[in-house]
Image (cartoon, rainbow, N blue to C red):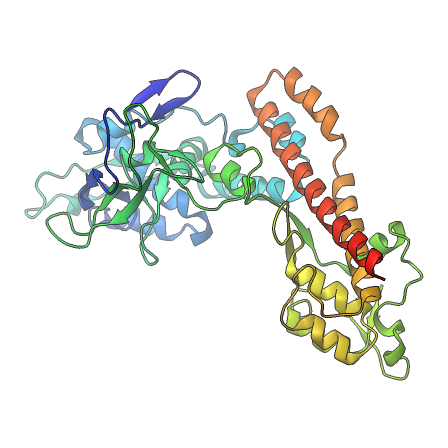
Length: 430
């Protein structure tokens, strides 16, 4: 374990390590989790009141109990290593840093978490293990009574969200001392796996994925996570993150605006297409009508139903446009039921897939471009200006927020460049 100022704790190899070597073996009793047999019934009852989406607060409640237990807790040495503050966690961002993000999806998540903490523990919450917690079968237990407020639960929640692991599909997240000091890498040198046999069955171990030399960092992959997920749960982002994305919504009003700025306002869409002229149109929105065969195709894609404002993802590489979005736009511009059906089927939503006419494909791609241009226009500054603001910012939280939105702009720019390549190729082939 190595500590560096402004960087924190990390693990490094103190000698040569062979591929497949076991570096840490952690027994079940040293995994801090909210479903442990050592969690008292009164505390379990409070944990059960926390919605599953706030799982890190469930683990955080148990962490707080161990912190109050002090030296009586088996986790005392571990808890002394936990950070006293979480400057990188957006839950604790000052208002100017939250505003600097300029990205509605993550701001909504920050506000949602803050509202939960304020509602659940805002007026303080008292939890007592109870007299029955210590009995003949467990004489070594220490009864703990604690009062929890929003600040304490916020700290514990941030600790849990940034350190807890889920090992196995059906396992509950657990904080894993020593193992959770590993930093993140998309090219990790170690991995965590469950121990299935022996004295430590039910525990976990840290295994080398390749040979390491002395001084090399021992790094885990936290998962193929976007910068939204990394910032919300871990308090950092990755520059040029290959898994980063920008969230959009399937919104016909927004699509109509995109058509206008893309010079496609006069292009037939929905029920205005040739085959639908004699058919009864279906109202999906106050903006657009679609023919029955288009509505059927959109429903197969998942863009019609109880929640028509489906969240879509735009990526900077690979399949840059969300498959549902591209398939849906192909359907809207389709001139026949056969063409719409092809757009809704395999190869579903793949960019450069030859499933509709070139005219339909170009219009769909140009609309995609305009949607991304609108998303880029939601930011108040250019990427170049952000670089200046980032360097001049004195607050680490504001710097992180600006760096976050810079990465979103890069994703949009890369996606637009890729879409433009496809449009130009189609136009050359006409």
